[in-house]
Image: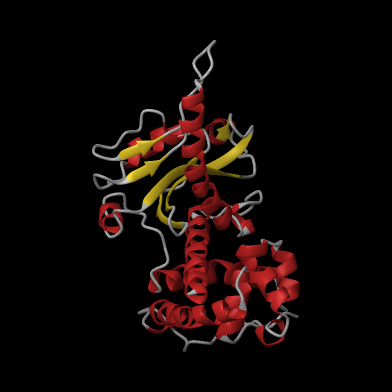
Length: 306
């Protein structure tokens, strides 16, 4: 049965289970503790219709310490095991594991929010964040995640991605290429939706003078006053000139960093493997958590390298 006191004795195992090294894991604990205390107060202690004291009832499990709670949910989003498996590994029933998963995912998101590691979700507030680092370069790209094929024939057509040849959900990310962090995360859309239509719909406000690197999926996306860089397409029946090829190479050399950002986010297998959960909006929640964890890791490792 997994518990933090034993797992922390094996650094490689802790890293494999959570994507965090021990100092990073413990740096997150105060935020997680505060988020857990707020959740308990809001959901139990201050609830007007509550009839029992907090801790009453049959909701029991082996994850009593805050470290074990954090290990449990970090392990779930990083490795994404079946609920029967994680229940066995933490000494509980599958139904209890399911309850903890949804409770602690919200707590983890709130912990990352307390630490200010979550990406911005409001397109109108993005301008304030980007203005703080106007000299930095930014990249924009879309990322898709496979889901289980919807049973409804009409609905499944909306989620079918012709690019991936699979049923997917999609998000748009804007990342700061200087430190490879996620600055903005769009809402979650069905896989059929085109990248440019998503940004046109959300219209994130980007300050004038910002350098934004994009690929051909954003052809025609030119925010006012923003300096955009996009590789040129090869003309039909013609070839690019050597100068155009060299320019494309230089742009791609910078733009590839947004791919590295997405790769870092997808270290959490819950946003990489086929998504199995069916609770409404949980697909959006875990993507936000994965971006927040990526930003947290980047922050920690930049701090340690100084």
